[in-house]
Amino acid sequence: MPRDSGLAVCRTLNIRTEADYEAALQQIEALFNCAPDTPEADRLDVLVALVESYEAQHHRIPAPDPIEAIEHDYELESPPGRAGSYPSATGAAGLVLRETPEELETPDTTWRGSSGREAGSG
Image 1: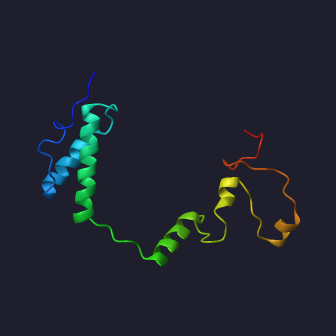
Image 2: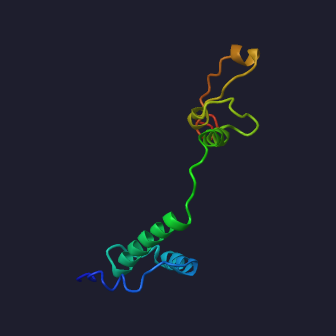
Image 3: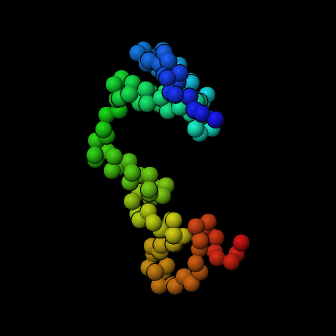
């Protein structure tokens, strides 16, 4: 089946006002799950490009302050109540870190997976 030449896709697509922008967002939402290689997918591509252009001109998001961005990432990676006490990889690896001298002296021979349960217990 031959595809639309693309000219019909572009008819009357202009985003000049906030109302046009909102209407384009609604159309994008309606077309979001369309099949690829269809006129609807072509229209979606054009609408997304137009919205991106409009947002770049009218809805600029300023770059974050570098220090605030680092602090924000640091807070997201720390366990609750333990800001910065664990490297972020320990949770993903299922490691249990010890903190007291007694805990440090006692070997832990069980491996805990990412679910926090001991291996083979579940």
